[in-house]
Image 1 (cartoon, helix red, strand yellow):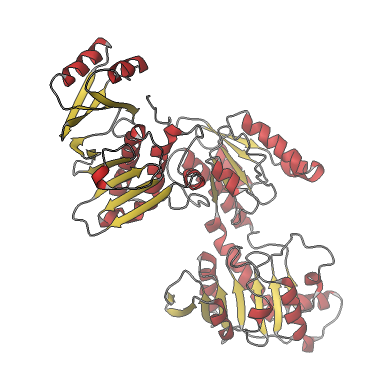
Image 2 (cartoon, helix red, strand yellow; image 1 turned 135 degrees about the horizontal axis):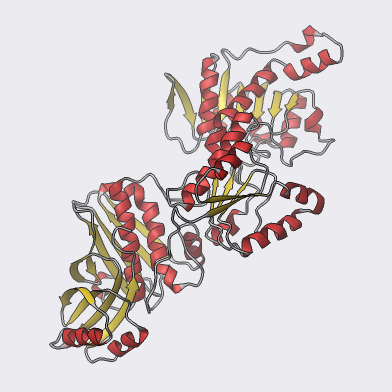
Length: 568
């Protein structure tokens, strides 16, 4: 059987981008200004959802996708991307959220269909950090209630005595982009800053200051006068500030949450505000948005609320819309991935050597794939050489795609292949051999028993391939199933395992000639009483020729594969 590599999309393809939400005019204009790019502006879907519900939006967008020709979708927070909508995704390759969160996108459904999901978190970093800091300042200086009293005609200066930031300790929950940006502003105001982040292993140095960092949330709490949250909503962070953790806080602690609703337990917050344990809270996010009209969080005298304004500035909305469009088009054109939510382990910031080994990994796994006839239980990938470590995740996904795609009807890519392998209980093991003297890539695949034993390499259940990229930057395969060689895997190829006896090579050459299939190159390797012929041919052998070869005396196995041409 011959397999053909998926035809890549090119810069000459006309990409159609569906703006399924209200985007900034600058984002729409940027799309329209691009060559070979077409905008489908459906800002009206928000009104459709309002009048007819989500099911009507699902049907409308689902019909657009199923008809084909839509390559990307951009949404903000108003439109949900559901599994029903993605049932028949057509040509859809990427969904972009113009903003930080992706709660309105069914990521498992998109991943299962091989659709990349990205967001534009970095574009709104400063805006979100500024709002959190503004909330903290307004909370500590009683800006909200003081304004309200003034608007009612009152004065009451004595009731609104506040606190100054200088000298207070800010406890940051999360030290990512936004947390560090808030920290910079707090330091400029003379605050001391401490932080909690389980993924930071040492204290952080920022602008000449040391941010003492804790890996346990409860350990940080007694040190903070103000808590500001900058973490995603996950099972681990949901309700992390609750009655139990409030008890670990200083009396009179202030709380700011401009991250995600539900990170601070609402009932515990109200109780702490009533008791004075919490001197005040400022919230920009809520469990359910908008909160119901009679939600006590709206009217509590110690709680300042805003309607999720974190990223709501002209600058941020322009930036997230343009960045979302740029991320979609870059991915479609094969220029890289930015802001990925569901492409874990896949990196685009690889150096030229790492990129060449990713290409080699694809060629090696596709070459090995037609030899796998007993299924796959385990895949072992060995990365020899320190330089390949950063490319491990990308090589891993690439190898899985190459091994599996010819064996499944489901279109596979680096986005959905991990999900598919996990569903089928395929075990993957990646070993970084950093101390190896030379850079090299080894792939070993075992069948149903899962046993990988080098002494049984010729057996039906184990397949192994080894490759390197030499100084000439050309990919080489140097071993297949214990047969040593030096061959460039590219183009249409035929692998023939045969008995090592006179006449077999002549028979193969004669039959290819009679079928008018020109052999451009031949590599032969011998091991024991058998040999492996690897042929490069100018045109694909027909199934009839493959069947006839298989019946010849001395031919043990035959497999065909079409790889990308060298340099593509």
